[in-house]
Image (cartoon, rainbow, N blue to C red; front, side, top):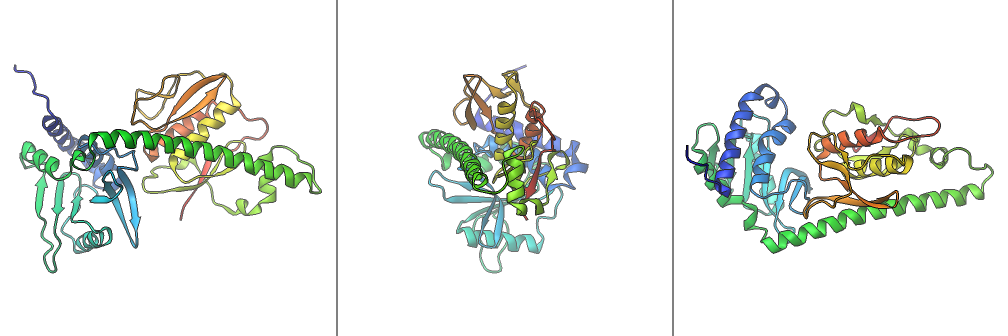
Length: 350
């Protein structure tokens, strides 16, 4: 039997065949759930084409501009949106009038020519919207079309190499990591500043500091008590949702913007309260990698650097939203809290 010839095109063909099989195997679930369709059928194609869906410099999920919000905004090395991909649950009628109007709005709002609409198996490519002419430029069907022909068209239209020269991709990986580390540093400084302000306020007040500073924050800032928190264990699917506040097991509340922030703060809390966490610590998101490691991740992988027991360690944070939640729960099992322990929870942006 001849060896399988490996090339970027053949790799994409393999992925397309796997997606076709997955669509058949998980059809019942995917026809009811757009986020599952994206994870199982669409994300693998984008990644194979070179688009790092975890790198917001390349792919911005749920990109909002004006009154429209696109599922995937694929950006070039200058940060300009070049392609929009709109995803629907498997089996959705892609010729619905309201969907076509949404695509027209995307093209107008983002000032782009290329918009893709897909249910994971069928891909409609619109490249030049004209009045009274909303016919797709190309329709691809992974079930019936030749996979090589589909792969060739996808590579021609939005392979990441067209928009990201190799040198620029390496540079953006480095830049993304610096930003990730800066976000972590700023978050730490903000907490220190808030605690210092709290100490100053209590020192000049009528009540002494009792218990944890976080409990005093809740007393001083009663508006926090009016927030509606959802336990992390009760979150089923947070794709497309954004956290606003995160409550740690010691009842302290942190302002967050991303699910990566929730994971990062969970790791830092566990490390600060438990001196005997085994490192490397495997993750619990189904990946054969370490959530906490003594080895620096490869270039292009998002991580945060911290010091633990005098050693430099690396937190792996290159997860999607749902896996950030899974791993936050996982690492918080190692946290130790004196006094009353609360469930980790978040406030979801309205």
